Image (cartoon, rainbow, N blue to C red; front, side, top):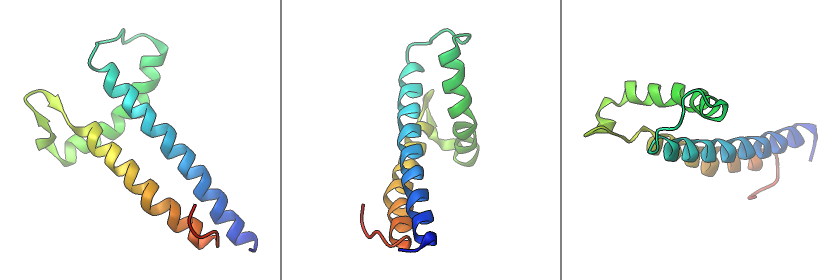
Length: 101
């Protein structure tokens, strides 16, 4: 494997870690939205700053996802993250010459 191959393998592994962390950030943010936490809490502010921009884009592109006050945009984002983990990460690994993870 040459240096370009190592680059794609490293990129795939880092992307997999980032996507996995973001998956859990979304799950925690969605669960916290059910209990109405203190909006001034630094953890809540961090989670909202990481998820609200993506959720608002999804809501803008797919306005029908808010059903009876229940927001389905986190589910769409979770599915997109899973798609990227199942398609993009293995594709980068294969491009780097590692085959399947």
